Image (cartoon, rainbow, N blue to C red; front, side, top):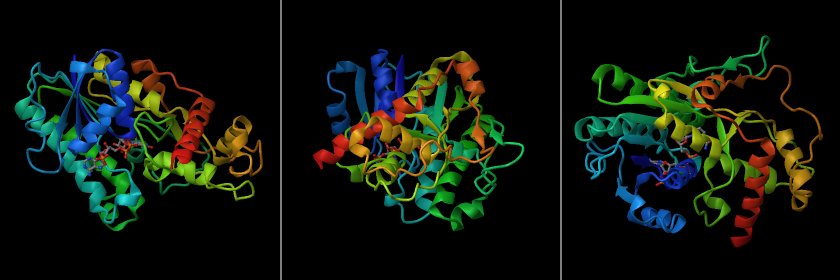
Length: 343
Ligand code: NDP
């Protein structure tokens, strides 16, 4: 099997690359520059002919992927993860929206025109495309989000709202564009999309400093590691989460299982409150005793009937299982402390 993977140098992408290479796949990694390709090579040495690169500097440019989708031997699968999710580098809502939507469409167009052997495309969407963030978090009865739900955000809200609105809308409109492409263009390939909520967990790619962390893990560093015992317990943010290694596994299953054809999957391990993250870190990592907010240990921190995201479909169709909170947060925090020491 020969797979094309975009965003291979990112937090999620590098875990997908890791699992693909371990399973013996031949992978072309798409990154934005030669120096990023070199860094991936440093992170994944010894893969010989199983790892090659394609450079796409601007994923929004017409025909951006025309050349990189062509290969000998040809590709049968494409996994598209590249999309902006780093608030610190964004100065305009369009910087979220354009690469997400145009980038997705350019990938699909190039495959249709130049890679007729591709049979399956997997796209990393997000629970941001599913959850109604304007609704109260706690309701009776409890809201449990599933694959049929879509974030009601509008295009106008995407352009004029907060950067958060723009990110959420970028994921919604990118995914909708992909489903629309399949319906209208009737290409040779089918589509599966994955919708994780907050993705946390250890990094597989090199990060030189905590300042370079990806969006979701930087939240853990800032609020739970680079803080104080008597700091207020941080707000829960998006309290549904999943481990990055499970997200990577879901991509590979969605890329390979026939039953994933034409399907959208919520990939969620469950709920986690800030208090629960604090309790786990303070219990397992003595170094954090005076750095992680103590809050009220043992309190659930989510309130009654906080919304959830259901992965029943992914469990049934993809056979997904999920790591424990301890595995996710303790391994991540230990690694973040190491990165901090290097800085
Ligand atoms: P990272 O920031 O670590 O990785 C993002 C990847 O996308 C990188 O390869 C990055 O390349 C690339 N990328 C970002 N902006 C652009 C752009 N304008 N043009 C071309 N490539 C770009 O984030 P994650 O690994 O967390 O995100 C990967 C995917 O997972 C995204 O689609 C994201 O929306 C989705 N996701 C992530 C969640 C999370 O909590 N982390 C939750 C739900 C979904 P470069 O290094 O060159 O910037």
